[in-house]
Amino acid sequence: MHHPPDLDQLFADLAHPNPYIQTRAFTAMVEHWPDEAIPRLIALLDQPDVSLRRASVRGLGAFGARSMQPIAECFSTSSDDTVRASCIKAYAQLASNYAGQAFTEQAMAVLREALDDRSPVVAVAAVMALGQVGRQAVPLLLQVSRGNNPAQGVAAVNALAQIDHPDIEPVLQQLLDDPATDDYVRETVSSALIRIEDLKARQSGS
Image (cartoon, rainbow, N blue to C red; front, side, top):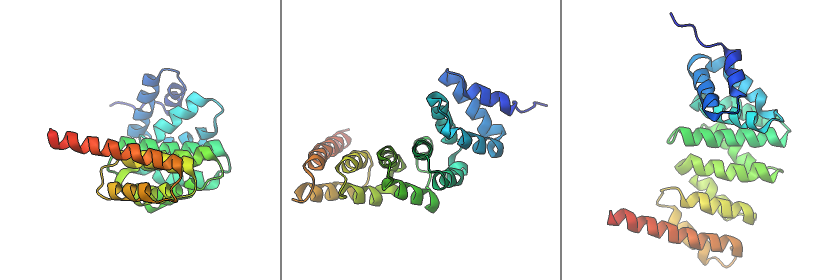
């Protein structure tokens, strides 16, 4: 009978500088210690050591739906900008690892709240995370692209351009035609529409 790997040893491996060893560590946590590992990974999000914090974010993203609620609780109870940004990055990682995995109401509420965060790092990370979430996030991203924060608007337009959804092109066209659209956002919309057209041409040509 195989004994599960020692959890403390897995956390020691997570702190290893080699990303391959880190990945092996959190993959084993997912398999053998999911309930015990998630709270410990969340506790590492306030680490001053950036590489350990990043490894913890990657680790949380490997648990799929199981880590959604703990990440949401961490975001809601922390007043530390770095921890909140790490929570949002963990959601982005999760969305990218589990494409098509529906985000819970609670997780979407956190991403919505993060868009208005006082920390610009958290707010921009939220737009990136929504881009990874994909179709489910389209209404929220469209809202941001029309908002009054040009930096976020640009990030939202870029995120939208990556998502395959029929609503996106007409709404981007509206933004382009709207005289109230920020110049910076309009430029981004213009190049996003060209990218979408190129993609469509390639798809129909293939």
